[in-house]
Length: 155
Image (cartoon, rainbow, N blue to C red; front, side, top):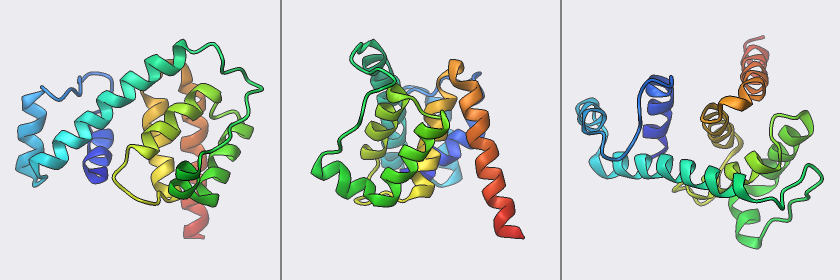
């Protein structure tokens, strides 16, 4: 499923294509590329869940900039120390706020992986921020950070 999400993000998330489970043209194209229908459906459901959770969390007035996040045992196990540290780091940089943090955590937990590593969390954050036009500056900061990390590896 994650590979389908990455492919969709890289190729379709430009604001001009509606990625819904009933978008048969995208489903057919993904099947031609070699993705299994089951994985395609799960990825499109994940994206639908992204839209739903953003609506629910945005409507919550309990999330203030001072809100602290306490992880449940399951969340702690699935996200891990490095992942939680990375999410906190993004909050400290201003890339995530409490609302986007909750969306990221929800979508990370919706992945089909028992323990999610930092690179996958990074992709989830990119997808969450990309789906929120008002977060364009945060998205740019994250993209710059990722590019800087990539260049550090090359040097």
